[in-house]
Length: 136
Image (cartoon, rainbow, N blue to C red; front, side, top):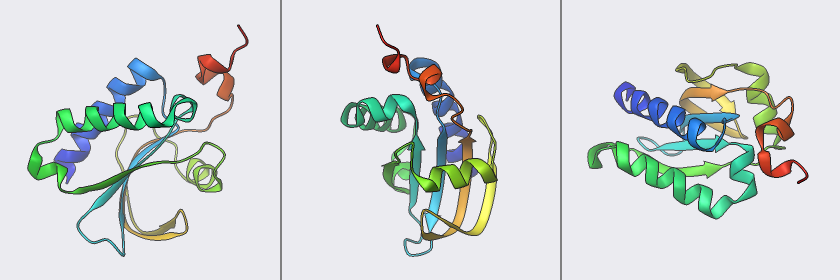
């Protein structure tokens, strides 16, 4: 799994450069879904165009993971910035392009068996992170 996380960390860095920073980017293994992981992400640029953002992230992930690695990924979850779960994670973890490993915790109202938090940073000023929010 660590090799997949390393590849995802690299992809997260590339996407952050191309599109803007993530406030959350991590892999979560739910207790009720053994052997398949959820990629959970949040960013101002995602919220501005969710369908195209999901397609962009999916294309990036498909390009870097091998088929045998892709089967470990259950879904990509786009979490809204105002979500209480995001705030709780940001208060618990601060990381950018890292690999924080967490076991046996509760996130998003779900029991999480295992997680890798790659990026979790506070959104102190969403306007500075989202160029579309600036009046033009």
